[in-house]
Length: 287
Image (cartoon, one colour):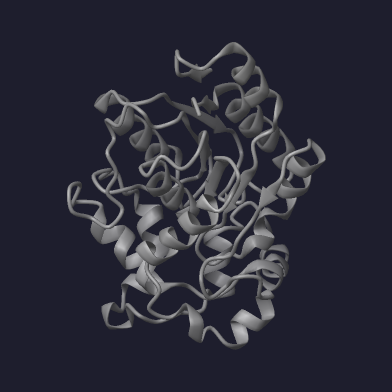
């Protein structure tokens, strides 16, 4: 537990007894619906849970976005991060922030702005300067990255590619069913910005200060058979932070889990661990 030394004992007790709100940030090709599992469980534990959509997704239904993805075109990471920052700053107190996949990149960008009391990246993407890029990760981006002229597009995610990216533990028929329920078009610019930021630690759009001492604790969670953010990528993120010597960063890996860590059978274990860790390590600030 991190607390500033000038926090009076009574204020500290009050801060700890009031449950922090939780902001959940979805990833690319997904909507807030992907968090229905965790959100319901966290609300049952007494937390206010806010699950905003990315600009252009907002509270729209999956089918509507697939029919008309125009609002996703040209939207980049800075615009999305600013969207979440506005929402978070409107809350009465700092939240626990959790992000999945590219939502984990956004979580790190928001952590660099000191917006939360604890952070959890579930299969988080790499930020600028984390150069580990496994082949399976690159393959997940080939439908977008293969056409640089489509940087401002909103390419659909095929059922075949969804099977590789999200459903690699499932027969194709079951993966296709999940595609129907969850998958939406890409924000092409987001993927281009994420990848081109990696070798540009100081100037990339996803740059963060890995040595920031005042950053609240950050937990990275990965799945053993995830094709998008395999354990090697998650460990590289953690190593980058830990080597820089900033705030607390820890790592947790789950055997047999794919990129669907937030919905694959057994997700309850991950949800409980993530929230218990965040509550135990949340940063309590004076004032």
